[in-house]
Amino acid sequence: MKREGRLEIIVDNCYPPYQIPAAYFNRCNRPTGAGFEHRAGSELLKGERPVLNSTIMLFLVQDGITNGAIYALLGLALVLVFAVTRVILIPQGEFVTYGALTYASLASGQMPGTAKLAVAMGAAAFALDLFSLRRAWRWSRIVRAFVVDIALPCIVLALTLWLVARHPPISVSITLSLVIVAMIGLFLYRLAFQPIAHTSVLVLLIASVGCHLALQGLGLLFFGAEGQRGPTLAETALTAGPLRFTGQSLAVYAATVAFIVALWLFFGLSLYGKALRATAVNRLGARLVGIRTTLSGQIAFLLAAVIGALSGILIVPITTLYYDTGFLIGLKGFIAAIIGGLVSYPLTAIAALVVGTVEAFSSFYASNYKEVIVFMLLVPVLLLRSLAAPAVEEEKD
Image 1 (spheres, rainbow, N blue to C red):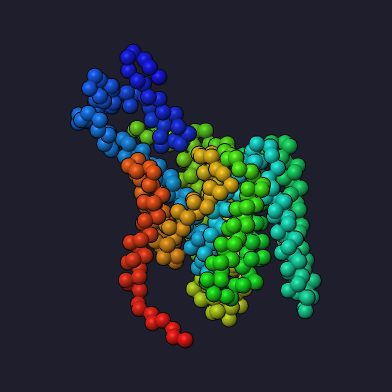
Image 2: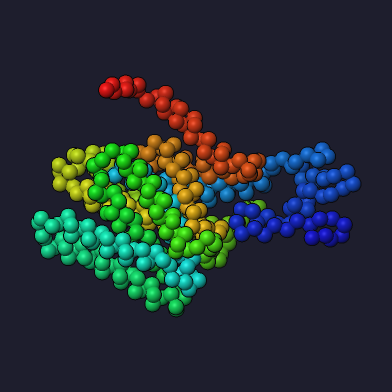
């Protein structure tokens, strides 16, 4: 906007770290007869790009921490699933997309197709349970399978149909979205991975790729090619010096910390959490002491789906999400999990913050190559791990 012979730059981006006051830019860069003149630091040469100053660095660090918090959740979910089931969960990104777009659809009064998908997957899981019980009918297991696979998805679908026309509050939409995606994650393990749980990691990886492609195609069918955004979780804001923390960014930090603490308490104090830890340490030993490894796998996928859906709900008020956006977000969580060795939860969380910070600074210096720079973080990590790992001789035919 032109005013008093100078260009006034007004930044009102939807992403909180980049809501920079116009006065700052007008103070730092002012057009003169010989080009741009920098008033907040050293003089810039004609045509030279502005250098990174402390204020912009704080914005980028804030952005990196916000992104890293999301990547930390996804990385923890990937480590959990791999440790318990040996599955590299590529569909983790689809859980992000389904949670985000289901929440956005409910908030806008539209019927999400994921609720119908949960009913269809539940029916298929119930048929598979009946087939597995064909030689030893146990009515208690049949009734339990009917309640979990048929009754619960139908109740959720009916509740969704009833609430859509009434524009439910944000808390109800969030809860319903988490429940729908959690059921999809549970049934996904029952249909695709539980029957082949004892096969090699390569077979499980191929099945994971197939599930990713199928869920991504269904996402296009349910939500279309247009992107969606959801309502913010909180309208409050907090200012600390030049930084402005919106309610949404504060919700991201709070949800990440709360979920990490909840997982720590779950694994340390609950019986099911200890069963998951035992299965992750030694799957055969856990079976010998009476732990149902199939139940451990179901719980792991259930938690991964909830974490993915929660991450999507936290992201969708910040940026527009499409049916295939979650795949790239999930890959960045996968980078953090790889840096953590797919076994260490604290190292994965720290690596996620590093990935988010590197991405933020890469978008400032070389935005066209930020994805390349982020994925290049894998190269030194894999190189160091290959050098540190003991040599294994190839088997001869």
